[in-house]
Length: 537
Image (cartoon, rainbow, N blue to C red; front, side):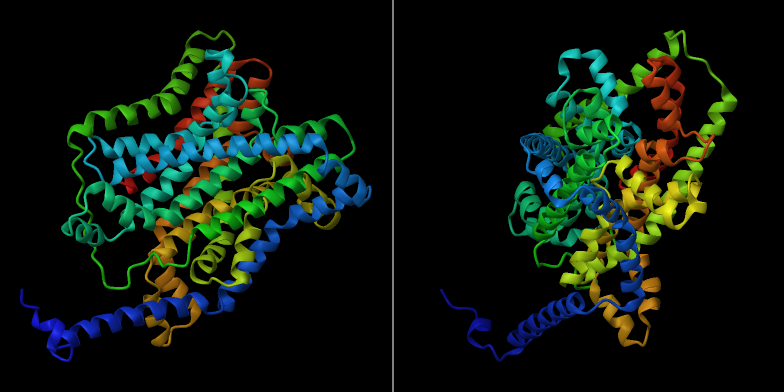
């Protein structure tokens, strides 16, 4: 068989074209590496450092409390047998929930974004609604229906059903940003749908999936409501018990320090999973949407899968709430009180989401565009408060407010700051995943045209990452509405949110009286959920 002439004449026209294309690819990769290695500009570095210091405030409080009786006493608590048991139980629960959320989140995102699933937009909206269900409500619903589920199984089930949207949302956003030409090229080379997904699509989803998994892990480590109702001992339950049972804050602070160490380890592990490869296309790409993949005979199983997840995570809690509203004798509808509580909830959640987004934006951009040790430290610092129980963050802010900014004590700004400390990683992860998909060469071109770093950020980076940032802000808005421990401690006198009223009524055993507030919470969260689901399909 005759050898093609192009392989025997490298100096010919075809060889020159091949070398030119290879050179362009090398130059694009070099530009990407230079962008990653470049030191962050001050316009990003300064606000990112401010956000990191802000997020590290609880660590200062923990250092004071954990060491006030001496390092030896704190070490005895940390190295005790009880702490090791809590460590194993917490990590075991976290691993199971993260694995389940990855399966649910990635599968639902792919089905609703890339497959020809009937009613994909509706299924995407339904997949975000569990964010509005507080973990303690989900735990009580399942505990009331199946009392034997108490313990590890119930905690894993409840936490999985309320937290898998943390994976679903960023993965769905990433799927929409992937250039479909890469998948089409793989299929044209003979790869089937499964192999194309594993070798082309999945590597590009890795940053979004890993970021979502990290958020799930930190959510599980910091949750108190579900594990408390289901009687499963974890660090958060032990910390709350220690704070409530004694005036000695040292044991609780020492256990909280262990949670911080676990957070740093998880963030470092997630950083390593990203690898060194870029995730943005280097060419012009294409703006057309990807063609939906026909499910064929798998359409019915796919619909059954979506329906089963929706039934367990959304329908079952709503049916239970409807039952409480219909037959509960203690359910008293006070439209005025409900409206005031709902308005207060919307206001404080919007303020919390706005402050969190402003603080997280520079951290997310630095984490995506710069791979130095300083960038990693800034990102890890932003995650410091997310794994801490809300009561620990709240007490730390009270500690600093009383000593240094007393006018803020028991004022609304202090509660908004607590939301920012607790939920900063939600927007950081969403921003980083969105910026990673934006070609860094566009920023290089803008700088080569004389644009300042601030103009590049405002005119290039932020517009390209806007969908991801908006998704992170919407997530933060929803979780701020249902946040409980910090809100109970820091809310101004006389102010109630839907979450605090719901917890008060539930704690008193008046589940029917709590139903209107739970229903209002879910309905309010349905608006951003609908917008997110509509965007992701």
